Image 1 (cartoon, one colour):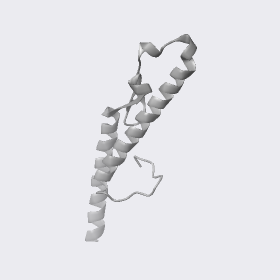
Image 2 (cartoon, one colour; image 1 turned 135 degrees about the vertical axis):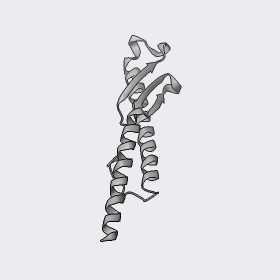
Image 3 (tube, rainbow, N blue to C red; image 1 turned 180 degrees about the horizontal axis):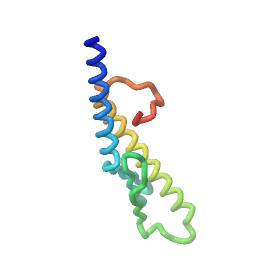
Length: 107
């Protein structure tokens, strides 16, 4: 029974740490770029867009599709970076315990 109570205590500690990470993710900012830095997107750690910056030099009516592509590429770049940061934080929390591929983070 001592093992069970110790496991429950560890589970509660893990849950508390998970909550802390969730809160930190909303404050985390990652910047994705495309077009050599001409388009930048900032996401928080949960993947929500916070801002977009577009260099005025690339804004022309004829290049609307290029601009759309640059925004998408920058958003995807930022999302990949946010996922990597979240995965790093989760590995710290789990002590490097490998998680199965495709495990949604946070759980």
